[in-house]
Length: 204
Length: 72
Image 1: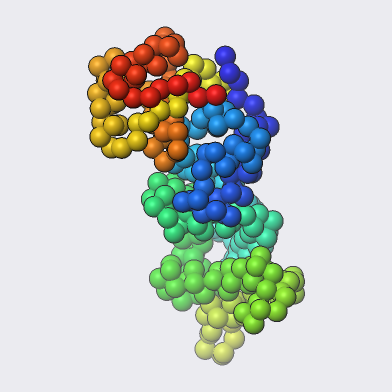
Image 2: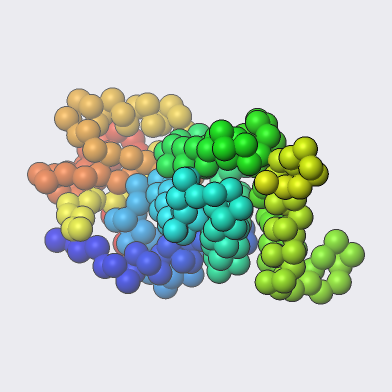
């Protein structure tokens, strides 16, 4: 009986993510992965049926792990500013600490694997976030806007900053390191953009 | 988690037609847990079975005109 070795599985997963990011889905082969892991190709096929199975299983595991980080200490019932702050904190942590996984997930999002991959993810992730936005609308903290519009204003600025950070350079090509101050200054701007202004011109 | 009785082969089951033919062979022999990785250079055939031996599969696939060697 061949037993699944957990250290080996973890090694395969790490190397697979590295290879998928560096070589893309087309360039990725079981042979290359076996070489990178110093394992036989047969060992990989004990764990996975084929290349698609490997990409899907590893992709789904990574998405689950990232979603868990993103939803840490987040409650859809939180007041708007507090809840959004928590989400920024989680997302920044998640993507800065796991740049390769974040990049692989982005690649998956733009691939034919998309449908199979994100089916479950949408429910786990979309529900609390949708509820959080709806609560904020119901409490009069933000205007009623489509979820997509909300998402773009709420998170796209953070994602762009993190992309510059992970690339190590800004638009002009100069070196770029994202600081906490930049994150939270940007957050305040986003908050200002989303928060409803009352008749006295103040945010609620 | 234990993965037992996984049989792996290097083959030349390369095209959709090849796969259809092998599907019929597998079906006729009541082998239902099988996959072939046609994206791989070795077209790896993977079979999960409690009963079958390596030589059974090699004979079966070879008899139908395909290369079939144990993947090591």
